[in-house]
Image 1 (cartoon, rainbow, N blue to C red):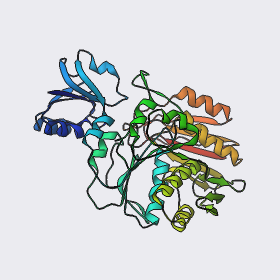
Image 2: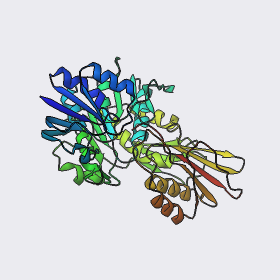
Image 3: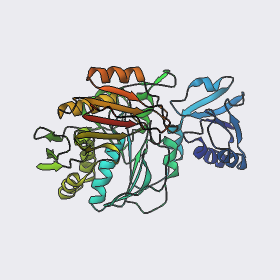
Image 4: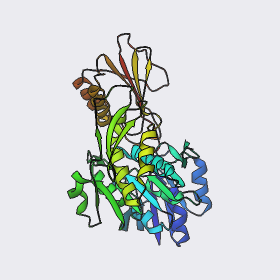
Length: 404
């Protein structure tokens, strides 16, 4: 039995030994030609055939590849069956620890961080793997022990430990075996695999036979897959006009109504939907009210995601995120407009990250920035700092980085 695994960037090297253990003749292909030679050597050591660029053209009994990988890499190959990497993960996943998997278009990392913060505050021993990195999350914060891709196969590479909860951000898909699966949103059903497939096709693989939490507004999208759904509704509402750099007063609906002051060091307005979903997860897990409300009050945002501060009289927003796109730019600018902080705003974008798959669409971003009357500066990506225009009253610095 011959199996072909396409793409060593998104976890083929994790799956190869597992298929080998099942008795398959394994061929792996580094289609993007960026896998380190040490990785390829380790695969040769277990007896796998290693290809770089295009796979050996032949007939395979099974092909497994990321859903977003274009079919062009299969040129010259025939096969009896093809499964996505998420489906291969489902095949091999046997980790019995309580696991929450989170995917979606936007808000994945924010939801994971919010949830980890609440559960750690509630006394749970928490592991968090996300686009910022992976490691234990305690009351003191996230200790990043490893920088890993958030592609589905890395669910099979979780560390040992007696964790109460494993929180795992997934770029596209999931294991289909989580205790709780969350889809933050499908704000844009964008094209993948050179526009031959859509994001929904990949993300649906996270759905489990247990608890699936999706937006109430997206019920019709996900209900057709026949899995049990729990709907996330609005639970956090703003109580007063938001002001840049000042605490945001909100009302939280969690087993009663609670007045909460969100810290002013981050753009809390951008986190409200993530809080809504995290609260739905907490309700499903029966987390006590006091632990939840205390944690929301003490949350300081995801480091580098919507951080705000002043330099003299100039307002600064910092966004370091693999998900920077025209949608996230629009969201940030709309938040600043709500705070009356768009006057003489300058948006600086650093588009370079070798670890991030999504490419920036400069035309779409320019269109959004122009719509909000702001100025756009795109850096050359060589690490040099651009000059800040003297007239700037608000500076938004966005760097597209992280692990996907």
